[in-house]
Length: 393
Ligand SMILES: Nc1ncnc2c1ncn2[C@@H]1O[C@H](COP(=O)(O)OP(=O)(O)OP(=O)(O)O)[C@@H](O)[C@H]1O
Image (spheres, rainbow, N blue to C red):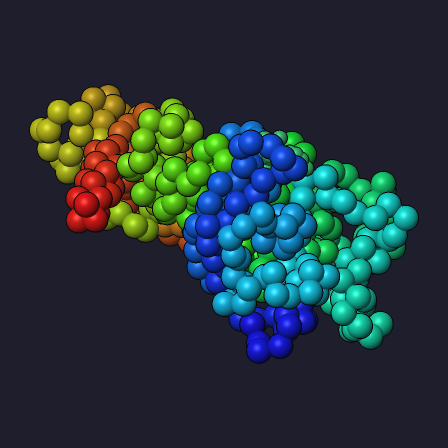
């Protein structure tokens, strides 16, 4: 952020957010809603606050743009004390997207997106082109949606407009409070994918609140697992939290299947591919049988003339077969190098041979990932994170 008050139109550079002993006491309640929270949200990262209902996530977030004033402590945004800034200007420099979307019902989609740029004094032509750009960015066809009213949109479309509006003035900081909470799981998944794509492009500093640990794992560069009064139970990368939850409460929050969730964080390209014996569909079954050798349970792949895997065959299958065209069982599922290891596991279970076939861009055979590789990877991750903890202690 520049030396002047954040203009909100500067865009570009991302900024760090620091909370120093931030406390919020509502009215004269004995217990603070947020108790002396200190944390650093690194510039350009997406940090997820996750924790049980009522633990203080929203209160903590709203203190960053001063929708709620802290009772004590300091919040620094790009090194500047938020309490020293004009609250209206501060809020214009921070994008804000919430579950209820909060679109103005009497304004069109375009007018909603243009609200903050308008407040910042942008001219009409610039607002119009920015609005079109934003609609495009969130995957809504500008010609179709520009003049619609919020009630003429589906829930998912409203959420997209909410995100477009939050981003319109190109703020360096974005606060998102359960922004995808009110939509069906498929739309939610799509919106999450969009946000990840956007973030890879834009590199904003984003604070994202959710109840949903899986959402946190998917989106977060880091996750802050919060307990009562926003006490930070663990603040680390998703990998580290999954591999090694700080205590039983965090482990409870991570929930069942932590190892499976770890597999969503790694890609096929992160592990070494293995090979199984292969033969071309034009060869005779005995050729593949010979390559399989005498090892029990060995399995081979039949490739078509463009080297695309088509069938799995064991030694027994081959002994009975007259042609490789019909031998064994078809390859049903395959993955590529960009697939997650969870996709690979899914393919292993679908094809039931202990391997997932990995293909290149045109479907040619590249290798396989075996169940042993997946188990080894999980074991390795766990050990790595245990080592890191040991070093810190
Ligand atoms: N305006 C308010 N006045 C008094 N108490 C409040 C107010 N807003 C929130 N609280 C209390 O502060 C605590 C933290 O609330 P907050 O909304 O920050 O939690 P949260 O973690 O975001 O919850 P949820 O996930 O359910 O939205 C709660 O106990 C809540 O009842």
